[in-house]
Image (cartoon, rainbow, N blue to C red; front, side, top):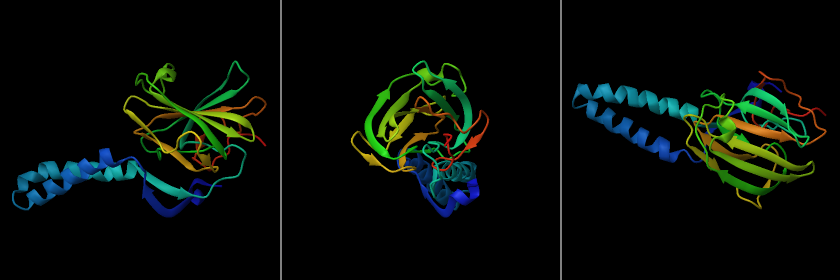
Length: 213
């Protein structure tokens, strides 16, 4: 399924953006009104209006038809690395650029067994030590066993917003959280499951198949 066909005409704003967006919208509106009285306010109104438009684009959250596969990508972005893990699992790390949608989705149906916030630094997501960044670790009980997904903050992202808590039932491709100005999501494939993606490949959350059938 292509990226274009996966996206429908309906686009909403992501949950959890109000603390960032509302002050910017208010400042843009206020300075635009003041420009009517004094044109010098345009020096503030123009960049604030442009910033508002940029944030509306950044925090978009399009509806999507789920793709086909046992495990779907949890994030829009580019596969940054694929690494075998000592316990037999395979980690697929997906880097999200500022142009990507930053709402993350459940890779498959199941039950959320834990959502753990882990304090850490704010290194750029492409840094090899970004594993120690601020992050939220998810575990899902599924037909494939325990599935781990990690939302990782980057140099700019300072807030990860989970939409669900332990005990919640999820459907495949359901929205589970947001990384504001976020940067990376890691998905751990169970032992015996090989990735269907390659390093450098683009992914679409809830659409791109991650595992080989």
